[in-house]
Length: 186
Image (cartoon, rainbow, N blue to C red; front, side, top):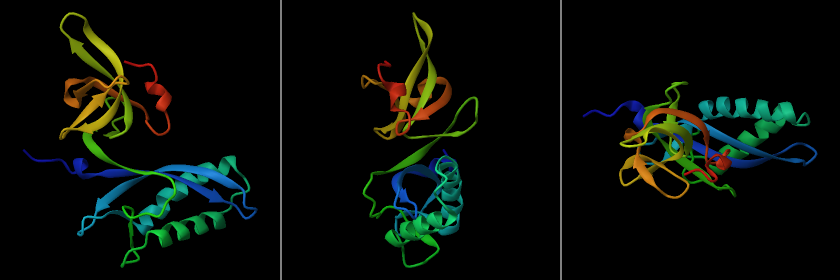
């Protein structure tokens, strides 16, 4: 059985603070995609790819905070890189970060959302159907987790079932940005 290359993809969730020239601080939450494994086992990203991805998130943040400038972005990337530099300046090691806030490394499940065709990762919140013998097909909201060597969907009450048991899976959020989607859902 061969493993698709998507199964070896990772994304990383960061929560950081960025400051403008007047020392106003802004919360900066973002995902980085195209995370790779280095030969020594570190997980990281190429610097050029990092800059492109952070610029997209920064532009969205700047639209709501007009005091932020392009210089603030360059300062942020320079500090981000300095905290995580490796021997080669082209590669950023994100497994040995000096961040104050948590960093989450999430693996791709190799499954795709049935509507958007986006890859599904750990910590995504999905709406999915499951077939029950007597009740028929039921639509449920679950968190994607990796459990006992398999990707599974977990309910808010802790019930776990393998991802491949579900049908019509749709991503509706993620545990970092939308934890309320799981509140009270069984």
